[in-house]
Every structure is written in structure tokens, then in C-alpha cells.
Image (cartoon, rainbow, N blue to C red):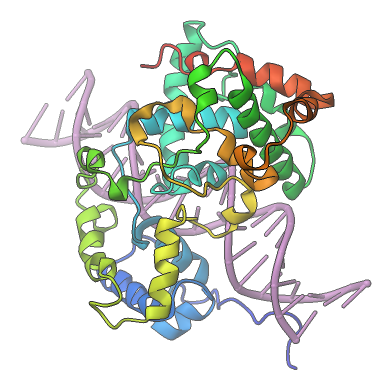
Length: 325
DNA sequence: AATTCTCGCAACCGCCTAACT
DNA sequence: CAGTTAGGCGGTTGCGAGAAT
């Protein structure tokens, strides 16, 4: 062996930076079409792209990957982002896992450019006491703790699960309690999404911002394996990627916040998006396992959970988004 | 019409963790 | 077990486009 560990990613010399050209995109897409996403280290060398592996991965996950929606955030999505941000803090990848057609980068940008401003304005009018100037809930103060990344995420994931239980068990919110499905917008199959599925509303004429260019690029991708003979093995993984909540980065699977079903309509309202199903992966389906309520309640309200419960229950959607719409 | 200002977004940077040898 | 890198993530920035003056 000439080297310990993994071989080097790529030479820093001669690496191209800046906006991607159509030729580069085609090169990247055709390579991934053949080999599937992953092994990014090999992408620049195999495609001849003068880009670093990170840049390739970013380009793919944020723009070229099929099934992503750009721009035109709906009110529903906006509410989801605001609420999830209050719950999770700036964990954009985790938030993006609840918005399968959105990338973490897109959500992050939208938060920084639009929602932050909105919250600030509403904060000045004194309508959201539970949200600080960065839009963080006071209950997410754990983020300031100098803990490991994994530990922090585990903690917030647990809080998410508890919040879901809170919602489900809350007598104050019958509508939420009756819904046992974590709603993930499934615009790909919904006619109602057509109104949001217009071309990327960006005035820029630069290629990088052209939704249509990317869509054209991806046209052949959406065909089922029968119609094309392109890497059936990858198509299935691609289908999983699109259908299985489209984990943008792959790491989101560790977030413990994925849904397993997409049964509820998107426009049912935000309250139901975080419900019991999000805790199924931790504890199984309550309706199926018939976990005693007292057991759940004990777990729910023990030690720190009690405070969590209080904070979360105080932080209803109506409050956190008051004055915004 | 020309110039300056503001805004939004694509992409880079740096850090962290997991994976690999 | 230690050293090294890939992959992932969040913060930040540079640039282009539109708005304002």
C-alpha cells in the first residue's frame, strides 16, 4: 500500500470554480445516469470534469437531481420551514427531509432571504415571543451546547418524536390527534402541485438558474426502466431516491425523521405534518402496537421532556407564524 | 439614460464524522 | 489503534439582475 486510508480526493491544482456550464452538467448527468450517484471522488476523473468531487456532488444534489422543485415556495412549505426551524434550529438537511422536493441549500437560502426577514418584522410587532431574533425557538437552546454533532441531532430527533406524541395526545388539538400520518408533500403525484410546478421563477438568464435547461437535461430520466435500457439497477435506486422521501444527501437517513407514507393530502394544513408516524420508527405504530397510553405519557413527560413539552405546546404553529400571513 | 443600491441565489469554505487502510 | 480522506452539513460570500435614485 502506498497510502494510508483513502486516496486523496482530487488535486487542488486546475480545479475549476464558479457556475456550471451546460456541457459540464451533461457530462455529470450522463455519468451519474450510468453509474449512479456516489463515489464522488471518481466523478471528476471519470468524466474529465475539472471540478472537485464536492462541487460535483453539490451540483447534483442541489440542481441536477431529478424530482427537485425550485423557487415558488408555497405557503404550506413556508409554514413548514418556519415551524421546523423553530423545532430543529438551522438543521437544514433535517428540515429538507420533510420537504422532499426541496434541497437543504434552497431552504437555507429561502430562510435567510425571506423568512428571517418576515420573522423579524413580526417580532417587532411583538407577536412571537417564543422566537428570538434569529427565528430560533427558546426551546432549541440545546443547540448552543458544545455537544457532538451526533449527540445534538439525536437529542433533537428525540424531541421531534416527543413533539409528535405531544401533538397526537393533545386534547387541545383534536385535528392533529386524529391524524397519524407524517405528511410529506408528494407533489410529483398531485395535480394540485401544478400551480407550483411552473418553471423556476428567477429572472436570471444565466444557465445555472435555468430550471428549463435542467428539466430538459433530465427528460429521459423520468422514463420507466422498460422504456429505456439505461442502467436498470440505478433506475431502481433513483426511484427510491425520488419516492422514498428523496433523501437529498443520503445522510438524512440517520436523522430519524423520515416518513414512510405519503397518504395525506398536501393542503390539509400544517398541523398534521408532524404526527405520530414520525415516531413510528422509534416506537412502532401506536395503532398497531397498542402501547399503553400511560407508558407513553410517562415517557413523554419525564425529566427534560416535561419542559420540552411545555415549550413545544406553547409554540403552536399559530403563534410561531402569527402575523406572517 | 446612467449610476448606485439592494436582493436573491449558486457555489465555495471550513468543520465534523464516518469510513477506510 | 492511528492516520488520512470522503462525504455531509451549515455558514458565508461573490456575482448578476432588478429596483431605486
